[in-house]
Image (tube, rainbow, N blue to C red; front, side, top):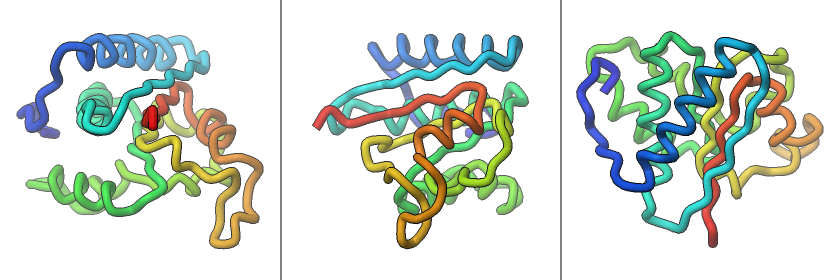
Length: 152
């Protein structure tokens, strides 16, 4: 995928969201203004496929991006799927846990793509005693944040 081969195909309404997200990411990259996009959809509507396609496209456009989830399982699956000929550290740097941004600098990332955003915690840390609010931390840390949430 990182070399331009499409593994996951986007269809119909996904193309509209994909185009909107690319446009917003590119604008934030150019002008430095913060933007946030919230994408809602039910289970099986392709939110995760869209998120991974955006990660690959924006990374290939030299933006500093990361795919963010609370749960490590999807991050590990996608990291394995994308690895191929690339160094493990390069691939692992594309994936972060939702509690990774407590001490991050403002606009450290061009884009943060948050999958399963409805599962975010209010605070980070093992005892949920770190930081102020994961959503605020993600928005602060990136120029463009996209949150994928499940309707249900």
